Image 1 (cartoon, rainbow, N blue to C red):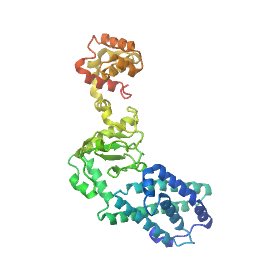
Image 2: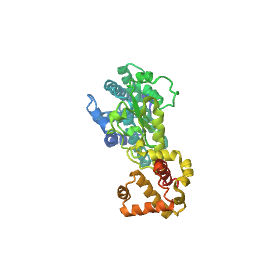
Image 3: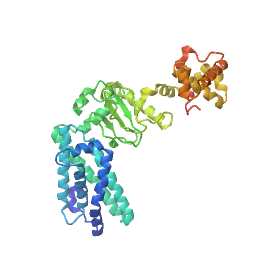
Image 4: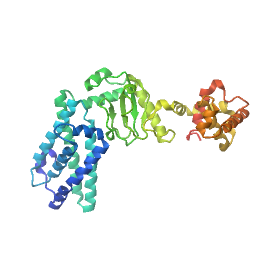
Length: 391
């Protein structure tokens, strides 16, 4: 059975159908809560839109799903009503200049609730496996039908090729390596109705933290790949960071010219890997430019390790319990501009402890460390040596 031929559907057993009808209010409550908590800004926007609210849309969609197998009401009529509803929603998105991504996000959140409830009911009530399979397939097909209807309404208003497709093409081109974009960026941006910025940055999200869990400004382009999702942020210095997702472990790549998005994405993903390995703290979000030393060190770990003997000499021959406090103190001291007082504050030790450790370092290296002319190399080497990877 397909939704296009809903009149051919076999009705569900009476008891099962009545149970689904009884559960509609509770299911609608749970789906509404999922959408409102996951997409609060979008929920407010929908509620302010004339003609429908989040709850009305969910209630009508759930009622349509149940009616597909309800012999008391012709299901094609319910399907037609939902198609008209989503066409109107898509048209409203087009008039407001808001992409359909967030509508897909809302349907995805609500659909997860519906499928989970179906599975729970199936196990509790011991439904035959074909019944659960049929209901699940129909749920996914109904969501697909809703998005198709919304796309038609959106395209009717916009009067051009599906903008979502054009935005995806533009997104991919913005992070393509030099010379690999299929068409000029200005041409792709015009087709997507997107104003080409001077600069951009890429926000890499951890695997599983999909863009659909966040409400995004319309100018932000999203890749929904669950393995490696990311967002493209135009003119990040102008737009600010207030709206950025507070996803734990997200990483904002460096700000780059618009034709160098691949650079921002590459460094954001490298930093994301270091967050996953515990090298960098999982801030929300973390910025690459705040961790240049760590990122640089981890790109050249083998070189720094080879150079460590020249820079630090006898310090590396000490046992770990003596070596690591000295190396840590030296690194913080150099970061603090050779200020022992500030170093003591950062390390939460007494100032005399810092000065004692510095004297030990000087004695062990015959006064050659730290070399004032090699502070940068020493800091990078210490950053690598004190990382979990090198220990």
